[in-house]
Amino acid sequence: MKPSLIPGCVPSSLALALLGFNSPVVIVLVVSVVVGLLMVLLFGYTSDQKAIHVAKDQLKAHLLAVRLYQDQLPVVIRTYGRILRGTGRYLRLAFMPLLYVIIPITLLVVQLDRYLGTTPLQTAQPFLVTVRTAEPDVLNDVALQLPPELAMTAPAVHVLADNEVVWRVVAEKDGTYDINIAAAGQTVAKHVLVSPDVSRVSTVRLRDHFWERMFISAEPALPDKSPIESIAVTYPPRVIEFAWMEWNWIVLFFVLSMVAGFIFKEVLGIEI
Image 1 (cartoon, rainbow, N blue to C red):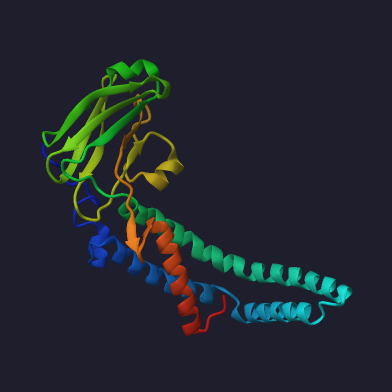
Image 2 (tube, rainbow, N blue to C red):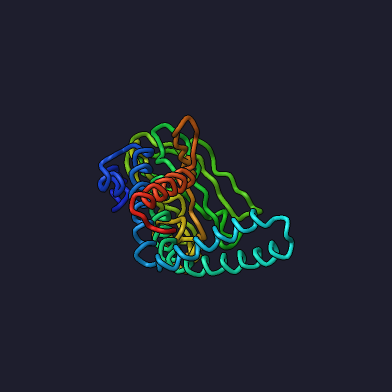
């Protein structure tokens, strides 16, 4: 079987094509700055800036009153009540704008995680293929069919407690391949990506599990009547080196986008 190019999984991936970079840290930096700017602009456009400014000024005044009258207990108690009411008013004003910001960012993170969350496999790098079946009786019938560029390096291991079969496999050359899993007279496929580039990776193919597929799988669902419940490939997690530290890309993205957002907030004069 020849390598098959899968849309969205070729070495010239979507992230590489859009940004023109093949460095994960540069991609995260660029996306974080752009998202930080868009967050601030969207918040400013969808929020009542005048009301937020007034609410923040009132909170500052109440906090100052606590410091000025700290030796007068009745005044302090009344002021704390005003602080609680003022905080609730501010949160109410900020809730909908934050919701408008959070939803698109969540969708963006899900898509970017398929490029930045894991690294594609490398040639001569062993990896595991794990198949889970719906019924334990099917385990002995499960067979792995590989293209010539991939080879098994160890016999299959059956994990009866989890209804799983595990193979250790290695790739001889870069490419995007289909591995086939045969069971109970049916055959299903799973994409495997071997590449040095930043590319779109799907770690698992699932049957059903709609929401789980939305977040972790970039492949169509397995057939409803398939005896196979899931096919997973163990891609290495990506670690990004930045500022003399090792980061998960999502943590680095949120830190940088928040820093960028606060900078743009000051430059543009938008109340948050």
